[in-house]
Image 1: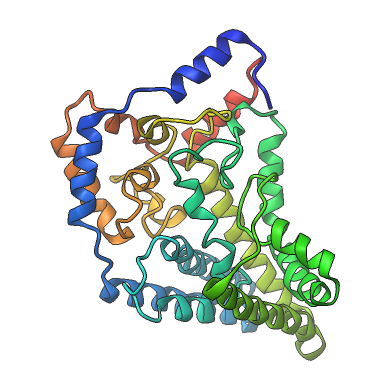
Image 2: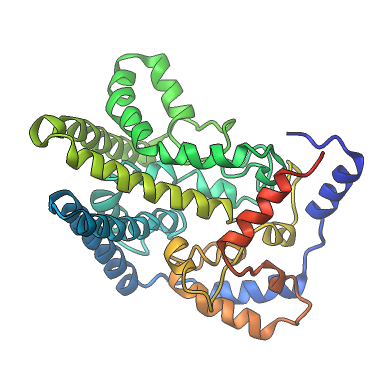
Length: 355
């Protein structure tokens, strides 16, 4: 949308041009150097345990006849698999060679069985962190949601709830067909191969090593999607419906987390680093629930925009250090919020404002 009110337009430009706070940026640079090493003894056990618990609980939800127990298993599966899936964000930032085999292991255990292989995010998410792209029309992960119509927020969540259906169609139907129809293949690569929220975003055709990685991940996801559909003939509908319900709930939680990851108040202006930070959200302790709905360091999303190379397990320490060392009037303190619902309410009220 476009802001036509000149006062609102001027306010938008002022927000985008907030001067960079040098003290905060210097402190963040020091944290980046100190905490930049990914610890495999944390990554591997966390990811493996989350995947094992998630798939085990899903099996329980499929096999148990007691409805209450099955629902409990499904809830555990949703939380565990959501945590396991969230490692896709870490994969986009891990330095090459830092965690040998982790990308392959994650795709094998999580990405392909959930039909969200890492190629959907790698090469996409880093554009969201590009200094001159964030919040602009070229940002694949940004829309001015707070400035859109009230119906846009329910639609944003509804689309997420249909993700399992969309992914089965993407990998089980369009992947095989696109191999036979070159124009369809170009469309699938450009428009249906990114975990993005900007409908105008288009991907380039992959090349080199990334293309080879893309191809085996897509082939695995396609085979899994076809196996899911075929499972109905072998095991009836219950396993597929349980899988889809858990997947849908997991994706809705992630979409709600995305909804509060930023304030979504920018409308295309290039932003300073400090303005990008202030448009992003930390939900730090003492709250406990953000550890469930924003796992694997995502509760420190604003800090992550200052320290994109710092692994998730070090963000809490970096946050505590910055809170203790930066002055009370530092912009850093303004990026911290209490929880999800106040942020959802803030965005909802903003969409109802007269423009």
